[in-house]
Length: 248
Image (cartoon, rainbow, N blue to C red; front, side, top):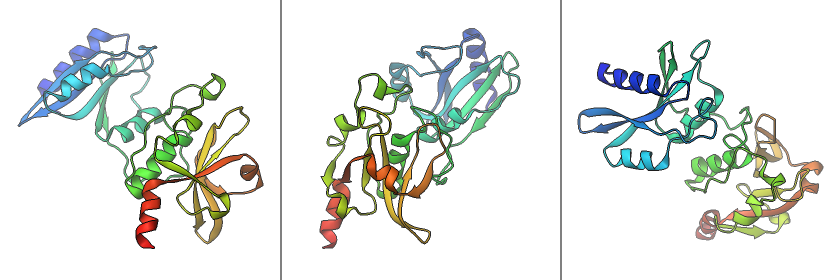
């Protein structure tokens, strides 16, 4: 990275210490500039959230090519799994600086990684996050982000039931389930709080679903009695319905 950028990042990180600093690098023509942003996270000594207004203002000055933040008082500069997940979703490179050591590392979005074996991180790597990525990668369907870093189903919220229709899904008969359908479930909760993608046949096995259960690694598993008993509804996205009608 250019010396001028590193000096600007270092000065901002030092000024924000012991909080995490955050900002973006923008490209305007041939010039690259670091633009500091406010960290509006509730716990700024342990996490960062770019102020949306600051990020929008930066994007008006040029293309955002890197997101920067700092790790205060760390033994060694190692990106966390949460860093990697958020980098994946951002679609741009990330730069991380430790402070007061001043070490710097970068990471790039992981492309086409397997859907299984992912570590659970509520709000960032959970059942809805996995479903969003699957529809985007497999069908080019962009779904809204309803993942939040707290147990919303215990807070009187009903994020699946309130939003599935607005996201373009229609209910289908479970006996007519097809690959690509979303299975919505109620798992140890009073509201619908879990979902999976029905894959049908996968690697010589039939009746397979892809999901990310609370506290577990994401996995492909048979759609057995445990999940059938907890199913609330099966839905199909309108884009898949349209493709199906076009083929018929």
